[in-house]
Length: 455
Image 1 (cartoon, rainbow, N blue to C red):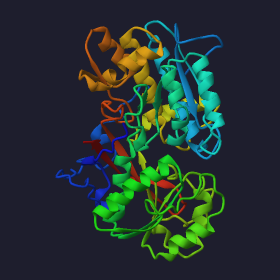
Image 2: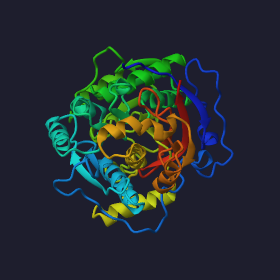
Image 3: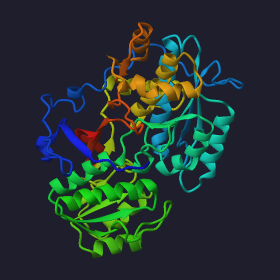
């Protein structure tokens, strides 16, 4: 049920000249191809065609009390409004809200209105928050649940949703343990087999051989660490601290890290990987105070963020991290931020998993449209098909896709997240991973994008 898959790197999108990367999977014979157009990391793969016409009127369609999936397309969400992943909340909420706005602009789902109902996921330090949110959305009979951001949080309530036959689509879960977990669980983010291979290959290609890990004891953290470590070791490197099976992980929500940092630095690594969430804000100053070369630190989607307000200038300059997902077009980002402002959330400063949240909602609506009903069982039955699992004509907006469905054919929705069709484990069959470099202000900037596929 939780089979580990090996990613096969098929395309290197941009920035390779500066980074000198050659990202290949262990045992793969395929070599990455340099993109012809290096002016935009995502343009050459064309994963981010405008999702809908720019300039159309936004709507903020919150679900009214008493509505159910019997006659309304109800896009529920269990997303991080609070907790150590709250920085991911605004783009994910905006992704769902903008998708619902676009669905209604195209006439809804077979004449039924679409709406969104967003509940808080909290984080893994207090699972009661997500438990209560899941029970509320089950009682309110939603068409789908978008979320959670944290794999551990999803594992807290996925069984309850499955038992209630509610389709769940996470825009950000990457734990390998969730591949094929439930027929009602899908995701629009790639599993850690892809991101972990990208991060491990990046570290090895940078010439680092002795690598330490500062990782929290969470399904996401340990699962990603295992893949990164395996990739580094396959390239001839070694793990010096925080390795699989050594028991050096710290609990999620920990606030002091002097002992962990001292122990890691004492093993004389030439690179350190930090796999954590908001704890990163305490780890980085502690690590910098030891004199370790911070440009030789690496991060992942849980903490590759803008730290301009958190650390002194230059703290993370040259450090790198990875975030799954294509770099969506500027037009899509403008629309996502525009909807957030329209809905009262303010302009977005981070776009991580916004496109994946948008695509999760659009795919679910297309599944409902194809099946002729807005209940969650209909969404589950048709979700993979509208992603292209059964082939069909490509379409990049909800309006264009339903026009093709009206003609009676199969479709392949190609949205701003750039994922491939959903596979038999309910994962994207292919996806992009962005490589980010921190500048002198401690802001992460995209430097390359690679596309990987499950094999």
